[in-house]
Image (cartoon, rainbow over all chains, first blue to last red; front, top):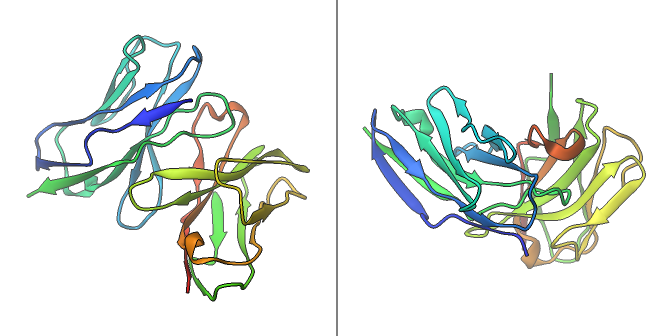
Length: 113
Length: 113
């Protein structure tokens, strides 16, 4: 079975500091895609960043970057210069090619002013 | 550019009632799917479709029905509502192989009393 583990139910970070959210997964697939989604209190699911498993280079989107380690099946999200608007639930959600995203249980991120 | 539109945003049902959650997308996406979100469990796939006329079951299909007569629309029917179906429901769509991730609707909060 393909599983996704987010071991940090809650995290907090001081405004302007850096925080890393962890995600590990288990799959026998070699070609897949990895995503981080943000869910603010508005409930909307917002795509933050994507990574293609066949690419070794880590994806970056402005203040968001990933540390992708394929052999270790690890896909962490780093948020730099944290802002109040980053407060949300963050979900790791790989796509292993079985017509669905497999979601972790989420990490609730709090930004301390 | 509307993206994925879900209606209604909120709904209260009595046990045993039936209803349809509507979902429409205007991005010409082949893949559409329904997820439910429960506290502490991430999002779980209910049903999905890879094109008009083609649907299949996800992880938690019992008590739900779907059909896909057009590319744009993918309604979810609750046949006889039960309190266990109290949840937040998300419709999502993607292009082939979901390589750019899924686009989500804004969700429907359903309460069954």
